[in-house]
Image (cartoon, rainbow, N blue to C red; front, side):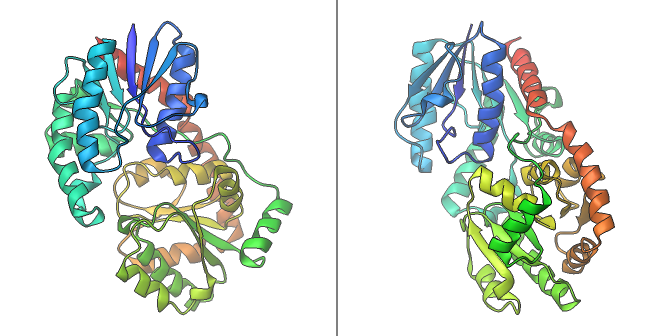
Length: 372
């Protein structure tokens, strides 16, 4: 049997959410199902370490997908042509894009449809493209999988998909996230914040991440006697005028530290040394940093909306993302060492629910349903 997989997000040294999802799950499935002939479809030259076994063949299809017009060409011309040549029984697409006219059945993993609800968070062209084509991808795919029960219900409601067509495949968390010894934490804090405690945010600086709201809540926290600094980890993808104004006028601007994107070992060290993760987004299809904090034994402050309560369970402080007072109060609560200890213990247990081994099992179950 042949299964093709859209692996265009397997980018060396640049794995993000969908890339990690693809890497962790298909690394396991390739090894667990040696009887399958896997065909990985890349949009540029690939690293050999992404070919996880002798039963995998990599194919480079052009052009590289860096623009909506190139997305259209790649998925509606290059991929169907390759599928016609390979004749696989199934195409799995971890980023949700699928050919609209192909005889090969497809399984689309649609992580979330934030672009349907918060249109201001994508450029006009990209937003138009996603809103035009993702309903078509969802209908064209034989089955759809997504990463949270919230996203599953959202797809069913927004796109009017049959519930029996939609599967749940949770995200997991990388094994390289782990707690640090106290001495190492002190070393990291000394180099990053002159030894002071700090809150940490991890993610692209997209408006839906609510960076401006958390920084305004951080101001309230400091004005009420809090001493921790604030570290922001991530690329300034959507640094806008509103966020810039909040930052430039912030009275504690010198205690807000932007690190840019960090590679995984350094990310783990900076996360595991934090007083708490501040991840109070306006919308998340899942919220992987919550799991990364649980694994690193760091308390979590997150939001009451979308998928975040589902992922956090009872192991985090939950706030209304639109309520800066609520967020500031959660910041103040984490100054309490005993509360931090309790949250860490709960997070350690909650994190056990989300394992990549389990995710691979859920994905294989969805593949079997699609093949059936």
